[in-house]
Length: 401
Image (cartoon, rainbow, N blue to C red; front, side):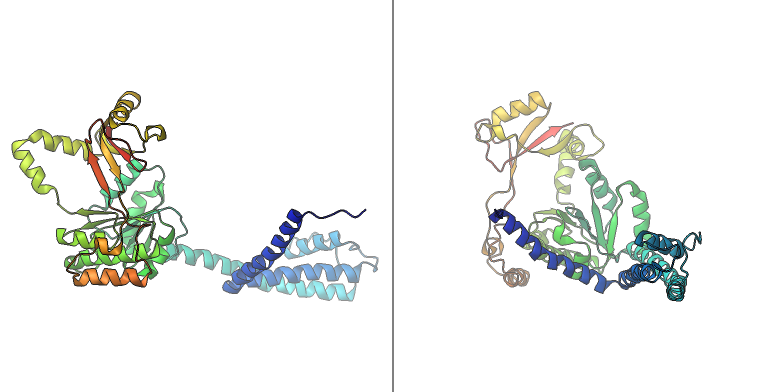
């Protein structure tokens, strides 16, 4: 009785058949892009054809090659120019094939070796100059350059283990390589060019980046236009990767609203808190000392953000505070949440300045009238009171070692 094929087996077979052409197409696309691979494949096929041909013309000649295994062993010895001589063709046809094979080996193998070496050297040079496509995923992009670059890198290193960081700026390759050598253990990579350009961001693989930091750049162009480049870069990044967390630095406080409207998750204004710290230094010195300690990487206790255990959702802030104090020796000072989702109109100013109009047009062109998946209002709720009920999207802000 003939066995019946189950529907599941049929479905698997059909899936395999459908997948096979796509695999072949991928191979053909790869071969079409690489001369080295095409030449290597042709040479390999010629070698296999030569071994099979020698077997067929030698198998009845009474010589030493009377099986396919011996023919392929002869092929390997001949190609490697070892010259054992234990298997050799004795017929005229076999020797002609062997002669052609030897000529091919003398001419093509050095060519392939040279091309491979050239490809490796070229790729290395492109990487050194920041021109190679980045293949990292869930990495951090650091766009721009200023005097805070070392402090930012050290801060990332202090908060993440083995971070993948890609620098995007217009700094000269020599200076960039000096920085890479200083941070050699984490293998920094960089892309050279204008970080407001989508082509450059594509090289940096922004579409698969987890987070992006955009600095107020002091290398490219006039510092007076640095904030404009920050807004343009934010627009480009959020268009290419709506899920990326984009944190930006601006020099002028007036630019901060525009950066937020462009989709920045967080905006840091250079020197924003200097007046407060200076005034506190004159009348409340302890406040300045405490702020410095909380924000310093060199101090034992620092301000940190941690996830809230699932069992505390729906419970009171006082209970969570006691948990962190008892179990983690930390002081809970407040909560952070993303807040509500926004539409384009919610974040644009009522006067619709030129920058706002530009931002709105860009979002419309990208088909993103609603920003619920990419832009929310972040909120820090400090000291909410013991009776506050923990929400699902809350994150703990605390002082801890």
